[in-house]
Image (cartoon, rainbow, N blue to C red; front, side):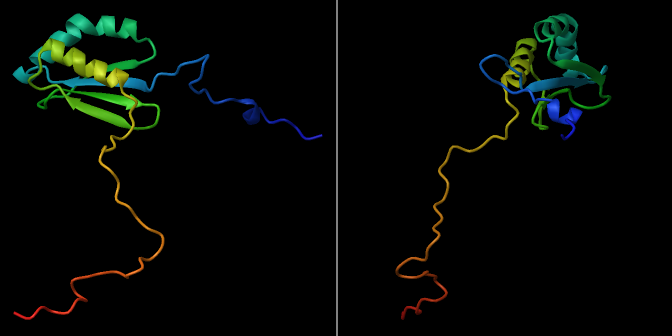
Length: 139
């Protein structure tokens, strides 16, 4: 009889009808203490950050000073991707909307909605046309 290894008994959590795992795992707010472009970000952090942390206990929230740089919020996701949103020139309610955008996002790469080009596996009946192979027109 073979031994059952402990690593084989573990299960990976996944979204299903009984569980829900949020996509975002960590949010990092970075701002400057002195720059005027970080004023609204500082106001948001003082007034709204505690409520945000209470409403989203599954998200690790980090506040980090970033001297002499523009304020940003960075979201880290379960799929090992991150999204960075600049908070420069945003009012407090605009910052709330951007934070909610990060919370609702899946972290997946943005895919354009335009159609993909058609690629054929077989050669065309007439062959490949190229302007380099065509006879030169007589002027």
